[in-house]
Amino acid sequence: MRLIAIKNLQEVAAIYPDVATQIEDFYQIFKAASWQNLEEVKQSFSNAEAVGNFTVFNIKGNRYRLILYINYQKQITFFKYFLTHADYDKDK
Image (tube, rainbow, N blue to C red):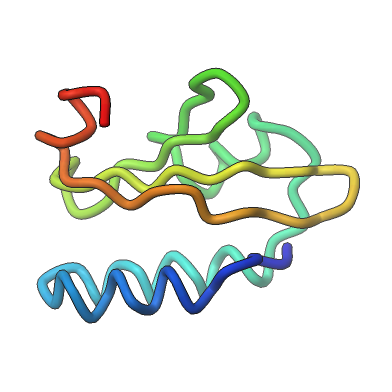
């Protein structure tokens, strides 16, 4: 799976140093994956869920939310948002 805007995800790791390890672990699993649907994503990340056209991942015990758009056919993913749980709940 190819992640477009990996630089944005790396910038998040710099802003939130308490989650840098989890982001790197996520990325290592992600780039080795070749998921075809959400059910396959859930085999790697059981907390992943579809919200509209996006897939939302809970990071670091649900303190953060990573929001991605995944195009399974092209094996491309677009980074959309990385939010604290509180910001996500505010619908930002």
